[in-house]
Image (cartoon, rainbow, N blue to C red; front, side, top):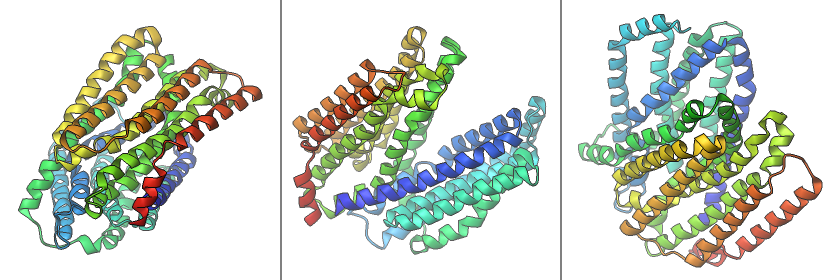
Length: 479
């Protein structure tokens, strides 16, 4: 039952994300066609800043709420108090940031005038309210997931994202409102769907706020701010360093590779949304066997992520050749490497579980910054000689160091039983797929080559099936 529910929730959350991306795919060209490059760049810059400020307003409260809500030591009556306290803190931090932004508004307006950016005072005000609604909506979505109601999550998420996308199109195409119009439309939609979100989580909202829970939630959550900053850095520094140490062309090659690799990231994110509410509940529901369940989930996650990532990596040359112009043929090699890097990134959702259970979230911050330094050093040494391929290897190494570091520390703090033969076997098969992906790159579409790779992929997938803990999964499902 655990694995079936986890798979079902993953499909639903993945479907919501996929639908949102499809909507964005069709509305993006309409908006970009009307906005000038300067306007579109300004919009992207503002959205990036909103996301960065969001790290501080959120303060890891989403993670903290998920950690304690289903904890065995949390009583039924305490759960609404946890949610309400976390939500109050989030709104308070949003109020503080809003006041700070308004106090510095004269400086901001002067800077906009000096840089001749196509956004006005009204656009900045809208961006402030967009910051509040975005963080509030994300918090509500995470609370909905805590109740294992993926359909409610799907409806609420799609409602917000569909309205945001189409309101932005109307603002730009019909009203010709530019950057200001897009930001105002998105902020208004955020406020419009906010009451619906409150209604969906009404059972967890109360006027009772606990100072003790406030301290616990902030203590657990605040390291996620610094971890998020580290992720933000090593998620973008490769492009900066490619531009400065190699060429803009290499940035283009790498960016195309990364865009295709986000397909693997999409699968990882879908699992992550499904897994986070289940993780603590499994510990509460199966106190005697939850550690073994965690390892089995890790093994299954690694196997299925290797199918997704390995499949794209194996046919990276053919994919690029079929979908992209000839000048992007060099994107295939870094694409294969990035796919496996994201596979490693996906496993962090399990390898870091012991750190979270022991409430040692400061370690997450420390390891994230270690990975950022590794990424910096890797890019520094590899980009001059290998360009985009070097940046891809630096990313792969960073994710490897991060997930191994998490796993080692988790095992020290809250060990889980590990079947090294099975884990090593699945990892070995993944390594074989990586090697074949790199050694047999093809910029031409050959039927014989595709068939050979397909047979190889099927062979590896079948061999991997024998390593999966199918019997153990069935036993847990019967409990």
